[in-house]
Length: 101
Image (cartoon, rainbow, N blue to C red; front, side, top):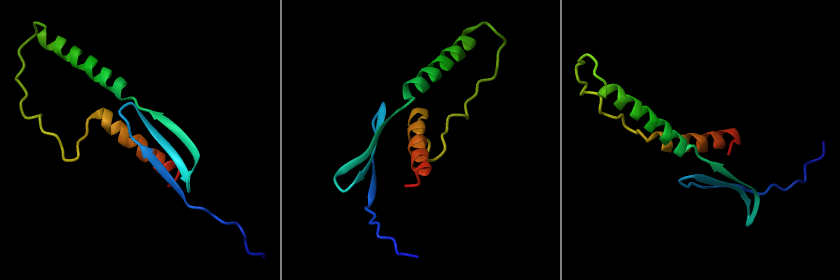
């Protein structure tokens, strides 16, 4: 077989995380090969959490039977992130594993 004469150039993955969108680009030397914007669901997640919170508060304010208060459920595990930030991290990791960079 003949030896391959193709020359491969290094490609870098550039990620620019933002609050509402994340910019993603594949760069070879100084030229952009491919670019994209990933829109986050952070605001939708926040709206869902707020709607759940309002429903919970409504249930608490109804005149129902007395229930013992809960007080030992306030601790968060190490490495905990807010749901909107967790979504951002997961989508960036998914992109990196999907394209194996």
